[in-house]
Length: 112
Image (cartoon, rainbow, N blue to C red):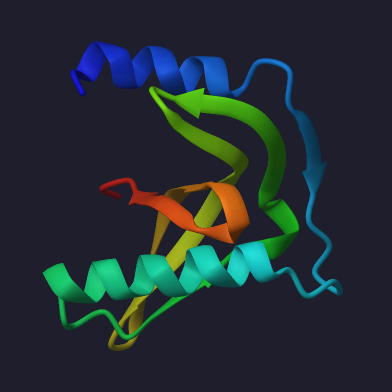
């Protein structure tokens, strides 16, 4: 998929979705799926990363009914994540796309 198509697809993801903030008191399997999948992907590239913590109070979980090409997108998660490397934490913006049956399709962390 070309970069232009990705940008257009991501822009259309946010049209017509219902957005809700996630409460810190509510266990959310979507957030945990995104966090654990993201941690696995990060560790493959950088084994020094010990953990990922999501800012649950500021995290947005948006229900969606759209597609990227032929792949259905059911939930979009976006917010801040903190990457733990030894004694230092680094804040990053975090994006996660979830498809049918709760399958995590994409986890993305910005570079600083």
